[in-house]
Length: 445
Image 1: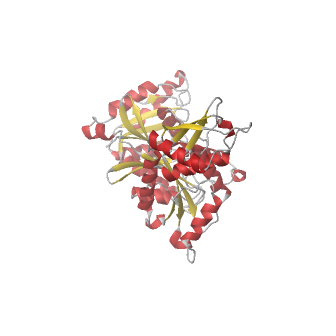
Image 2 (image 1 turned 90 degrees about the vertical axis):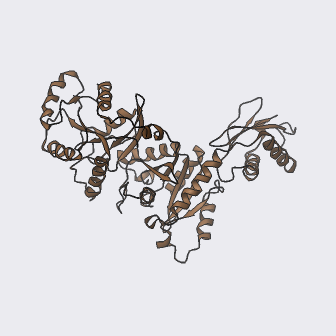
Image 3 (image 1 turned 120 degrees about the horizontal axis):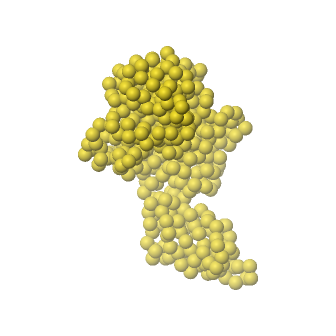
């Protein structure tokens, strides 16, 4: 099992900044507002050849204004329960506060190695102040600054000193291939409930409070011995309703999660009409050329008297550029059809990585041209499509050599894409199509 290094501390000591610094990417939201981080954020990283799961947690002792204090606290305790090493983070500028003493008491109960990290020591002249924290009882403190990137090397070395000896099992399983699933949708459509159903635990906080999830949260789970990664994203609202920095960060985290994903699950609430946010998300998915499953959640509660066929037609009529996307009807709270969605996602994942033989691809191209000739070029000459080859997977990307690529109209490109999707082994995923000739061409798909 991959060891977990868990970051713990009271609010506003810079835990998320430290997390991003070690990951070397902006994963967690950094904001001066207390209580921004609620869920456990987990990122698998490699530090000097050792693979670990770095875990960010909410501020310990924070009284959440949305009434989620107990759920946040359970997430922190779950992090401590699985920790191989705890990074206990404090703020050099404030000195030891009663809240730090309370965190120390709870961390001590975890019974695992603890590294006391004194953050915000932006300059060396603040280092002597860090010695005050030795009174917390965890040995010599290490002064660092995530903001100024001071002492990252000593911090990594100190983490290594406290990690357990690497086991054969850990080394063999650390880099298992994973399919990454992004859960996206507007607020309160049940994305986090779906993720918890996959993980068989309260891995992500759920509540009726809109905007409960603020960060993109990575959750690993297994199906039939195979590892997957579910990325739970913040619920989004319309642009004009985004009033805070947290809303801004959440929106961009969701966009990035779509780009990271192998397959996207776009969630809808069966009781609500399709919204502008849903359409914006669909546009982002299309631009990223990601396989997608339309997931209609809360079906058992709200679909009385409504046929699945009606919702299916509603989706097809709304998202006319994505007729290939499969539709699933689920009740995430009760776990109904959850695994069927994962099976569908696996199918799309395989299709997106299919590579059609060149001979077969050109046979399909010739048949398509025989049935429907491309339009003539600007001089009235027939456009010739000479040869096709697949140049990439995920998404399947087809390059066609043509006499006049710019003369091939968008309707004809769509015709070719539909033929390729029907005849080749990627029926339910987006395909990118390029035409190449004497001039550069733009992609279609």
